[in-house]
Length: 38
Image (cartoon, rainbow, N blue to C red; front, side):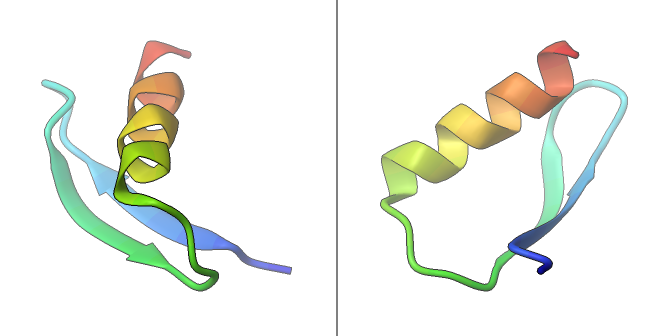
């Protein structure tokens, strides 16, 4: 199941974030940081 769609620039700035299940805003930022670090 798709839980989120993220479009992140090469500089690490999120351009589009769409989460399909409820999560805290802190968790959103943690996920974005984790994806960009990979």
